[in-house]
Amino acid sequence: MITNWVRQGFTLLGMVLLINQLSGCDDGVAQNAPPVLIKPVSKWDSFNGRVEAVQSVQLRPRVSGYIESVNYREGDEVKKGQVLFTIDDRSYRAALEQAKAELARARARRRGMYWPLKPPSIWRS
Image (tube, rainbow, N blue to C red; front, side, top):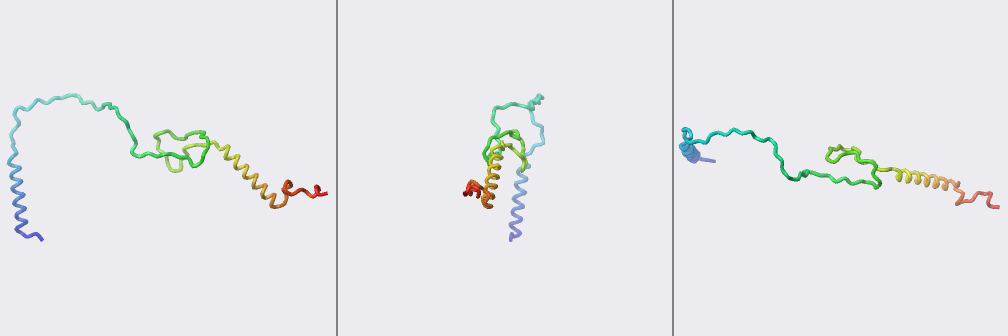
């Protein structure tokens, strides 16, 4: 709790400092002032330097393959889910077809119809 005499002391000190500052002010006009120069100001200037982004992102593929096309330009803003690269899908299509063939072979073997592993009955003579 601040007592009344401390509050009065701070008020008196503030008034003394204010009077001291205001006593230095002069309402007179400055003598021997230099003339005012009016010149055109250049709004543009060129500088040598290097600009670097505050944030940067490294793009790394989740799959391997040959890139057919790049669907963005450097410096463009991209949105979530936007396709950035188109990858040649021929190797993936070939792997899919091979997997489908292996699945069909396994299903046929399970049913007992794959004749290279189980010869037909006409060969059992």
